[in-house]
Image 1 (cartoon, one colour):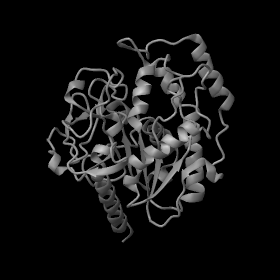
Image 2 (cartoon, helix red, strand yellow):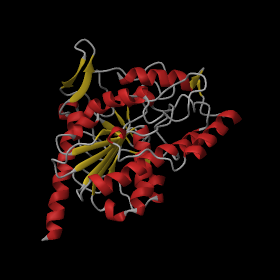
Image 3 (cartoon, helix red, strand yellow):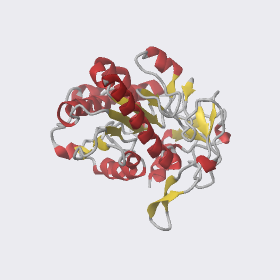
Image 4 (cartoon, one colour):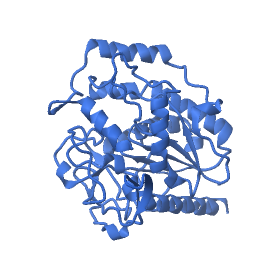
Length: 350
């Protein structure tokens, strides 16, 4: 399952005990530039159903637009910087990850999922952090924006919606919020919430985007929701998805302060049982408490080990379990925010 992907990514990005995100060869830089320039504007045809993982019938009155995390990791010689839209080794793992994450939204909404040409994290492993994010801000963003154009013009039908993602998918959604929604306030006013899990939303990001606001509780709407899950041993350690100035909300009590939420408040995680060979609900899977200084959610869970053998996420990261540990609480919160949005919209229309 997904943890094996993270171990592979970590092994590629680590050089001894230091992160490789500190140097860049001219060859790799030029490859990114050449790939980006040659494919700029050439987004996939999103009228083609094959370019969507999920394009459901609209049987519910709310949608979710979900962007999957990093799945394409090819460290072979000459591997492309960006995945091909039909790349099997991206599509199949993305479908598995969907089951672990985005099914949390299915009870309340129609979940739409485009395929996109995501960054091959192995191929850009020698770039600086800034250069990697420049890669995100090119072909992948172009694809996601094109998918949104098609979605709003042909699939949404004026319904309120939720944005959702994880890791690279949340990076894409952060660009959607900062640029696409700023350019389309007529869409943003129908946004119930944006679950940007597994990547830091920072105070500086919010200051640069005053049209956005971070969630303060369980039922506010039009807000951004984010956290990264770690163990206490990550304190003071590098984690590639935890940025300076990060902020989080507690996925159990939906508070922004350091109020501890015991595992008894956890409605159930959703984790892969290796012996049974399937995903299963795990009662009281994890506790949660925000570390305000670091801007992350700390857990003492024992239901699964942290990502191991890597410095890129730190010694005690639960990055691959950001959704899984709190799955049923996310599901319940989605319903809560949808109900709050409908209630506020009803009050406005009266």
